[in-house]
Amino acid sequence: MNKKNIIKEVIILLIAFIILFWDIQMYSVRAEAVEPQWGSTTIHYTVDDSYMVYIPESIEVGEQVEISVMDFNVSNDKSVVVSFGTFDTNDSIYLHNENDYEKIIEVCFRNNEGETYQSICPRIGTFSNGNTTPITFTSYIKSTENAKAGNYSGSVTFNFFCE
Amino acid sequence: MLKKKLKKDEIRQIVFAALSCIICITLHISYRMYRIENQKGIYWNEDNMIDNSATKQVQIECFDTLHFDANKTLQQVSIHNPNGNSCYMKYQIILDGDILWQSDMIQPNYGFKEIIIRKKLEEGTYSAEYIVKCFDLKTKKELNGINAEVSIIVS
Image 1 (cartoon, rainbow over the protein chains, first blue to last red):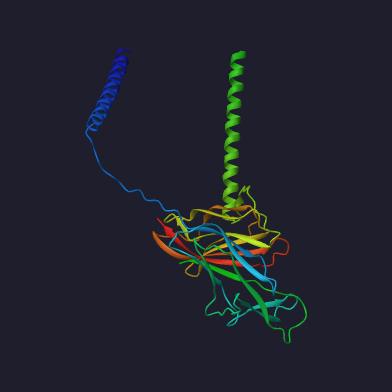
Image 2 (cartoon, rainbow over the protein chains, first blue to last red):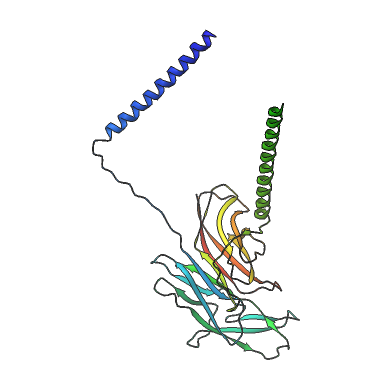
């Protein structure tokens, strides 16, 4: 019992010493800090470019198509380029007959100046901090010659990248 | 005697509460992992809604950088189908022509905060494609979509 008490007392004393020593150390650090100290560090943080795009769900042939952006948070030195994904021919994409997939008609796209977009230069437009005006273009049927009667549909993929 | 009984009741209540908590947490984690592993997305709880159904437009969030952890398959992201859309979205991340990750068809107001990619990546910066395909809610017919270039920074 006595031994136990002694051990307890020793432990308490040790803890007291540790606390005291710790406090002295802290105090000495504080004392040193009184001397004027100068230095600097650089803090880096990057907010990634992001934006919300609005594309048409589907394209009605002959109607004007609009692509726009919102919440545009892109660095000033960058712009977002929009282009057509893939063309099925040099200048058109295929719409497939809903009842007979093999039957197709070709759809082309032209800009507001009347120029048809080509697969070698599919760029539709760009968005930047100074210019987030919606981009517009129109689609038209290349040829309906020998086209089978029925409804035709297809989808377009738009490419977006920062440059 | 009464005191002893009270104590026993209290212990029983504490054990019951603890067990309930464990069961709830296990269920929650299992459900979350099921949603992640099956690429189904989680409820996004997005209140501010811009209704795109009238304009027949699709709203898609784009970014040019993804940050992944090195040598891990579970990654943190923030990808969701905005609440105002009236279409499903299917997401893909393509790296070197291979699918690194793809989702199931995600309904509006659902998305991903965590994904499991198909292979672990080492530290570095990778050039990848972020593809978003859209599908009609009723017919599931494919609509217009986007393909964006992204950098994956692995650290």
